[in-house]
Image 1: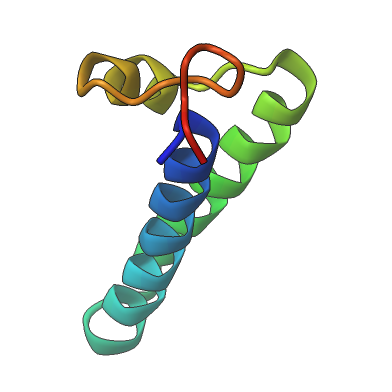
Image 2 (image 1 turned 30 degrees about the horizontal axis):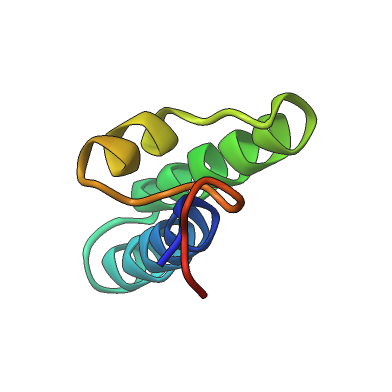
Length: 69
């Protein structure tokens, strides 16, 4: 799995988790969805998000840097 795919997976999990938490506990959990959306928006322009460094430290590779798909 590449860093790009892992970031998309993590974002999707966070959105679904925040929706479930908002449904069962408090609507304030929707702010987590907003945070994920803003982070995805800024990463589209800068090609960087905080999760990328974390995922690279776990050993995931970028596309074109020795990754096999």
